[in-house]
Amino acid sequence: MVSSYSRTRERNQNLFAAWEKLDPKVFDTLNVSLEATKAAQTGLQGYIVLPGMPDYNEDRKIFNPIFDSYPVMIIYCEVESDVAIALDYATTCGLLFCLRSGGHCTAGFSTGPGVLIDVKSLDSVHIDPLVKTATVGCGVDFGSFNKTLNQYGLHVPGGECPDVCIGGYVQGGGYGFTSVKYGMNCDNVLSMRVMLADGSIVTASKQQNVDLMWAMLGGTGGNFGVLLSVTYQLHDLDTAYGWALIWKLDTPDDIQKAADAMMLLQSDYMLSGNCDPNMTIQVSLCFQSQIYVDQPPPPNTPLTPFFMVRGLYVGSSEDGAQAIAPLQALPGCITQWTKTARYIVLNDELLNVPQSMPMLDQIPFEDKASRYVEAMLTNADWYELIAYFTLAPVNMAYMYLEFYGGAINSVPTYDTAFVHRNAAYDAVMDVYWVDSDDQAKCEAFLDGWKALMEPHWNGEIYQNYASLSAPDYTVNYWGGAVPFLSLIKTKYDPNNVFTFAQQVPQVSVLGDAAPDLSDFPEHLVKAARGDINFAGGVMGANASLLASKSAD
Image 1 (cartoon, helix red, strand yellow):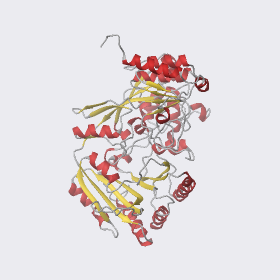
Image 2 (cartoon, one colour):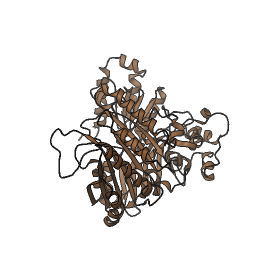
Image 3 (cartoon, rainbow, N blue to C red):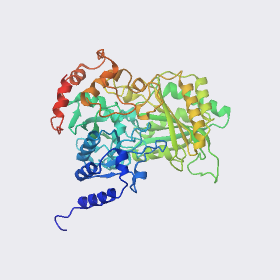
Image 4 (tube, helix red, strand yellow):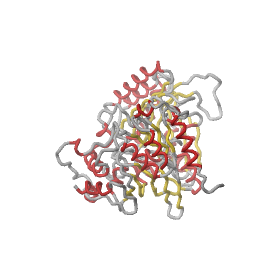
């Protein structure tokens, strides 16, 4: 090959030729210049997609089609320097921007009308089996990550969906089927590399910029900077024990049996009673047509509601079987399967065998709500909630309870920005529809569920299940941590460059009164009031400005 040849240069020339053929009004409408866009593209290893280009309409989409934004442009970042170029381009042009790794944000914040900065290609994975750590890029999805970890017999709690990426997941906490044993995903973080608004790269760890690390472990993605990579402490995990139990919900008597099962789960498998820290449980209510793994239903068998208890036990199959025996002995319980297998197998089968939960044959529209619960419910309460689910207007509805306890709840409330450490479980209702005519009744059903949950709700919402309908998102997501998060937001993003509908507010928004930080560890408060530590990173053009503002 001729040494002066460059595929990147050839690609850019082809892009420029395509852009020059676009209607000039495109750039006028976008309020950007063709020349500035060319200049940005010249510095990129990745590439820019503009409206009017063949791939734009597909590339702008995220996981939930209810969020149907048309970004000014999409900048695909292949290397970290691309992220700096994208940030500089957006801020210089006075454009809003959003960040997308997997595109699974339940409130749609991974798309918008400004510049969409896509970091999915920052997907490197490095495993050090000697010290049992993994350093992964923000664009790594859990399907790839778990396959890599499986080779080494190592593990970190991860997302149940294989398409979910590290970037947003870890910053919202990160719950999975081993979280009661090993904690939230964020509880296993050793360090993070973060790009600030001016292109600076800093390390956040327990030794350096500890306040930033604290904030990004639950403070929600897109608030303080661009998460570039994460280093995790890993755990040995060879095989585990999984199970799937199911109850029919065809009659009032069936519903009563499910309510009785919830009473046993509540007394012996939650925070109090005989909760086993080796076991993570998820209760699911959804519509299915198949009960037994080896007995597929006849064609066109209607979907009907079921109550299911599924989980994973980190330990021997004998101990796991003993742990679930009281549930199996309950009236109406049918054991669908039990299995000892690698985590990667169980994580998939817990959601998909014998049928997927929920049953979807295409990507639907979706809305959801999360409600944390600490209080114990009565049998009548459980009956009411389960009976309500059976009335779902579209048979794709999916309600689930993610049980907490163990390692999740052993962390003090303000040790990280993920503050939901007193919950017994996170109750979630998902509604899906394909036909637009069904949206109103699905939304009404979701509202009805929220009303039923109101007496039991502790006022908190899992920030990874963000919703634009959250009553007071700052309190719902972060509770009493808001003043401290605001202080850190103001320090690392003084010009409020990282902005979106449910962002961490800056200190100025909260008022002139000094925030009460007495509940937070002294070393964190001291760090938050100190300078940004740029050691071992990259200082951007305005790093000195950031340092001076952080010292104010």
